[in-house]
Length: 262
Ligand code: SAH
Image 1 (cartoon, protein in one colour):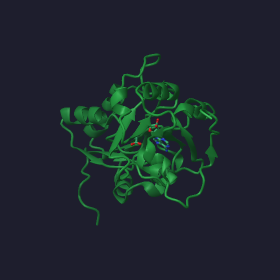
Image 2 (tube, rainbow, N blue to C red):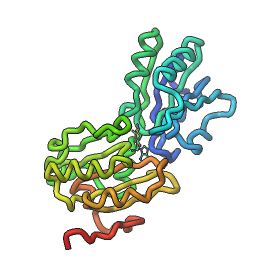
Image 3 (spheres, rainbow, N blue to C red):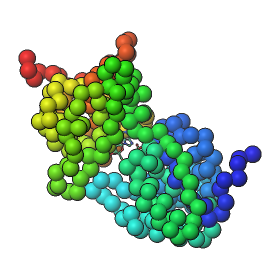
């Protein structure tokens, strides 16, 4: 018997993971099946949506950079209205709701309106990318710090990041929403004295059938991202640890040629 944790009018913010339905938690699958209505993001792909039983109402509130189909306040209001109508509400979010998922805003709006909200965690893109690449984000003696960084900025604005802190030795950086800012990321880090040859992994569509991994180095990052599809979710991992896949490991699908500095 499933636990009695989904009363009418309650809302669950559910992490959908990076895309592969097998990377959903068992709890997420149970909550999706028990919902009356599911609100989902653009990042939540068709294989996961296929798990929503056909009788359950589904509402896309997709947000992709540059193409915001609904603003956050509208989404908050839709969730509040569904909870007020005594529906069991699932808000399905890519990856983990607590990372760049606007979950705090939604929780505040719902709790402010007197509704019960719970969170079901999910596998974040950085964890899935490390798994696919066969690397460890932290690495004994190499990386004792892991930073999750958003590289999303208002159109045209420079990234407001503490580059010297990010460039410190012994760190692994996971840049979310960073494809368009790839050149700026590389410049910011190199100017803050991170070595130009620092290993970088660019990972698109991680865990999905069209996953792509590109192994490169910091000063070639902008070049490596140029050919990527504009709408593929892309994560950029930077740091010595991500260049240290324990061998033997299959080669990445693509490797940018390193000519710089020879
Ligand atoms: N809450 C999500 C992140 C949302 S922000 C999480 O925990 O993963 C959206 C960004 O996440 C994308 O721009 C990309 O950087 C990253 N991302 C999400 N899914 C991804 C995937 N399947 N492959 C690569 N990057 C992904």
